[in-house]
Length: 124
Image (cartoon, rainbow, N blue to C red; front, side, top):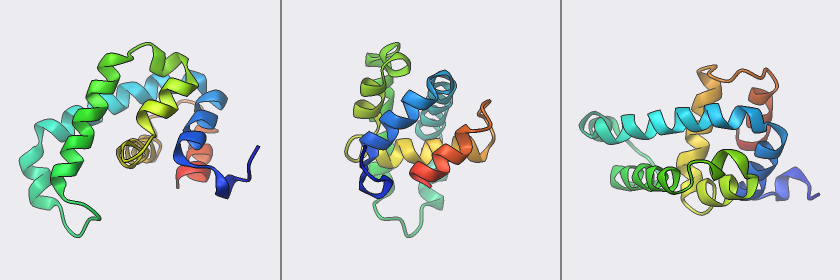
């Protein structure tokens, strides 16, 4: 295995899924809720969007793309570490998915106490 600092987002997500497969379904439920919130509350989010690396339109596009991926691979995302990592953590999708993952553990939505330190280590 590569050293942690040499892992890309897809590799980190694949490792996380492999280690915590039971936690992934709950995270995917949260991710679905999070995308719904982003896409239904566009006006408030746009008004509060300040000094980000990209404009708010891209954030909405990423949320919509996450929804499409979740609709296309509903079972595979939770069962397959390759599908989970490739589809949700490849390219710009990683920005949205990693943000949601960090929010998920920050809000203590996870059930496994070891999940938060793992997310902090990989994506924090």
